[in-house]
Image (cartoon, rainbow, N blue to C red; front, side, top):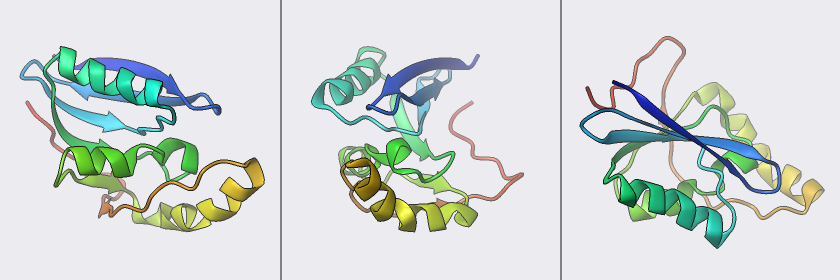
Length: 124
């Protein structure tokens, strides 16, 4: 069975999701946490349910969707961050958008390409 939990993070009300299976393998989708409280909410949820974080999935690279990616990548070392390479221009444009909105520039991170129609297997 697939389980899904939704979180709303940062001043832009970005939607983050965690998807996991009965074996507790999970993926985090669009981890846009911004404050320490938001970070603690996400990590607390993962710890309480004893989830095994296997991947980060990005729907796109807008700064509000990626604010927590670098930290999660450090916490769960070796964690792949999947994103369609067609959206890399958005990652490169974030400096401009952050200046416009007065938002912090997210820390850099590496991505693993995933293309439309491909499947990422996280668990069962």
